Each structure stands twice: as structure tokens, then as C-alpha cells.
Length: 534
Image (cartoon, rainbow, N blue to C red; front, side, top):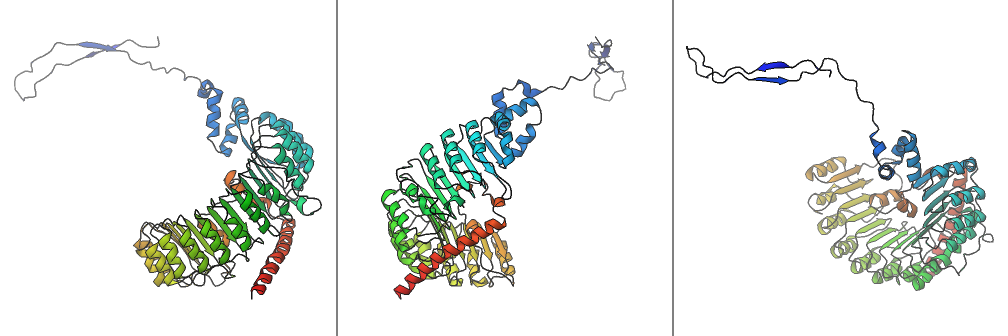
């Protein structure tokens, strides 16, 4: 069918390769072979096939899970089947939590019926969903394990109670710039017995101490592993939650007003398994550091702008917490932490891997001990140190054999001292030098050429360079992110930390008030003690 008759193909006789005047001799008989000849008329192309139609739904869902969110959205527009499967298999969802969302909740969660990680964010200038909307979402998502609320100012304690009743499997809760108080958090702690991470930031309902009573001491959060409190007026109302969490591992306190030494003393008695502590812009003294020394499992310590902490408290802590591997100290240029505290760390913390010193003035005496005794030191950062010069960097280059990353910012080093890095630190892979007036761009290029495998990041100092950026130093030193950024991060928690929601005049005014009240407590107490000691 559709073919013409075959054409005979005749095999010609074989001839000898020799040149001869004689006639060619036939060596084989003639053989005829027939091959079909294709028709000149081409057949019509086959219809388009949907090869995914034969794939089970489960396989398509696995493919969707491997795609980023933007690609998942595009896939949902291919056909109705993909639209349904993409919605039913989606586990992570972020919604604009404006008041108008309430009307769409039934339709949305009919499609996204398997959501277990939910983020509700509202613009500061818009009205957010209220208790009814949050309760409806909770009833539609009984398997919710992670929840983030940002700027949901219409949600009250009653809405949080409804959430807790409908979502008993909640494991991670992060709230920020909301208006409910401690009773809402207490309801979650009572009903969600699997809660592992709690992050509370800028909770407006805690501004009035009468409206935010302490969380009941009867609550024992056995499952709680990490707590982060940030920019709270009356953060002490959560002290009982922290001290009654026997399995707590991570504690982060940022810019919260009040005296926090009593909490650290309670932790030293009830919560001995703490491995990571972040203290930033707090009223904490050597009394609190000495209390933390009763936690032998401590591995990570951040002391950022705590002017009442001195070498005395750091020495006691280092003597008993021998497992420390990451230490960040921002001395705020108060000169209350220096060689004495660093020498204690060098002698008692051999597992140290990361050391960040900001506004601290170490000398070659303490740095030599750190480099000699801490053989596993891989990341070192110094910022705004007036005593870290050529002698100190030469010591680092000669002694820190395991060092991989070095960051120096705003220190009095020169090309002469940096020359030691050309042959020292054999494992060094990255060097960053910023705002060091004694180091020239020509030398940075020479160092880059002399060690081809070394990444050299050099920023020449400008005429209007200001104070060093602490957050930049910490980031370059490889420090870990925020609690929610790391867990939902990159969470980012990489979840993003919601920086887009932090703007606005009201937020700026609120931060100003926090700095005024908190700063008053910091400095009055610090200088009172300093004056008393003199």
C-alpha cells in the first residue's frame, strides 16, 4: 500500500586491481536484490501526544515538589489536571493577609488542601484578617506544622486560641508586629504540645504590663527546643516559658528591655542542655554569664553590645564551658572585654572554630594563645580593633594553620603585616580587608597573584567611611542567621526575615522608643556599677 514496484539492483562483476591489456574476467554470477522504494507521498504526522497522561498522579506530585515556586505556578497553567495536582500537593504557601482575604479562604484551601507551612503577611498600611479569618484558616489546615504571622494587627488572643485548638500539630510559630499579647502565646503552648520553635518579635500586645501578664508557671513546654525574643517591651512575661522548657537548646534575646540576669540564673538550674545563646543589646552582666557557666553543653555564644559583661564573667564561663566552638563578641568599644577573657577562651576552649571580635582590642599576647591552642580555628574576624596591627596579623599567619577565612575591617594594619599571609595560613581560601588605611590596592593585587587559589576581597577606605557595619562582619564570618530565617530559612529560618514589612514611620517610631527605654536601662546600670567599682 502506498508503495511503487521494487527496482532491481544488479551487482556488477568484480575486476582485478592489476592493470592489464586483456579483457576483464567475470568472477561471480549476476545477483538481483529487490528493495522497497518509499512513496513520494508522505503520510500525515501523528497527532500530539500528552506523554504525562500515562504518569500516575503521585509521580507528577513528586516532580512538582522538586520545582521552585515560580515554576510550580507556571506548571499549574498547563492543563486542568496539573492545576489540580499542583494545588493538592503544595505544602508551603504564603498569602497576603489583608482583610479581603477572608472571602477567598474557602476557595483557596479547597485547592490547597495539603498545606502544612503557612505564612500570613500584611502590609502595615492595610487592614489585616481578624480572628474569624484566622480561625477559618486553622479549621481548613488541621495538619499545619509551621505558621508565620506578620503585621496581622486585627488578630487578638481569641484568634490565637482558635488557632491552637484547630492546629494541635503546630511545631514552629513565628509572630511579628501583631497586636495580641501573652495570653495568645500561652494558648498555643497549652494546646500545641509538639511546638519546637517559638519566635516572638515586636508584639504590640506586650507594651502594657497590665495587659500582658506572665505566662502561667504551670505550663511545661517539654517539646520546646528554640526560643527567640526580639524588641519586646515586656519580654520577661515569657521567662517562665523559657525556664520551664527542660529540653531547650537555643535561646536568642535581641533588644528586649529589662534585667535578664534572673532568667539566666533560672536556666542554670532548670535548663542545663542549652547549646546556643545569643544576647544582643540587653541588660546582662557578669552575674548572668557566671550563671550560664553551669551549662556545660554550651557551644555557641553571641555577646553583642552588652556593656555590663566583662573579662571576669567571660573567664568564668570559658573555664566551665569547654565545648564552645563559635564565639561572637561586640564590645561596643567599652574595653571591658580584652586579653584576659580571650586568654581564658584560648586555654579552656580547644574546639573553637569561629571567633568574631568587634570593638574589642586584643594583642599578640592573647591572639598567639588562641592560634596555638585552638587548632581547629577556621574563621576569624576582627572589626574596629585599635590594637590589631602588623604584629598581630603576623602572629595569625604563622600560628593559625587551619584558618580558612579571615576578615579584617577598620584595623591599623599595613602592607608589611599583610605580606605574612603570602606564605602563612596554608589552608586559607578567602581574605576580606575593608577600611584598613594602611593596606593598598596594589598590595591586594600582589597577594592575589602570589596565591592564585586565594580569594582576596579588598575595599579601599573612602574619605567618608563611618563606623564598621557589625552585621556585615558577622555575615562574612559565617555566622548563622536568625531563628526563623534558619528554620523556615532560607529558611530563610531561609524564610526570609520579612524585611519588606519592617519599613514605615510607625516602625521607626517604635524602634526609637525601644532604643530610648532599653538604652536608659543599659547605660544607667552600666555606669552605676562602673562608678561603684571605682
